[in-house]
Length: 39
Image (tube, rainbow, N blue to C red; front, side, top):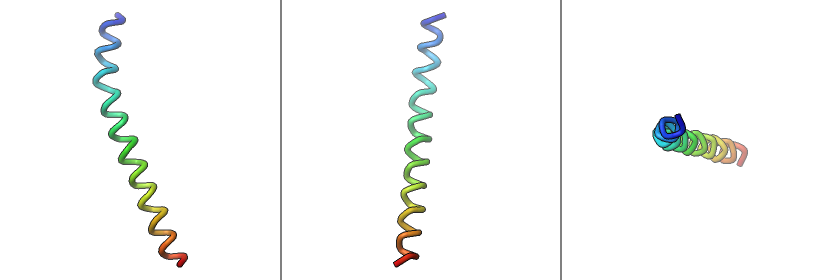
């Protein structure tokens, strides 16, 4: 059970980290656009 759980985690972790990075990049892009509009 533990080995199977670790195996699934090794597959899920990279996908989650990739999606998290994409979400952060999108949020940063929105903030930059809003700052430019305010100026």
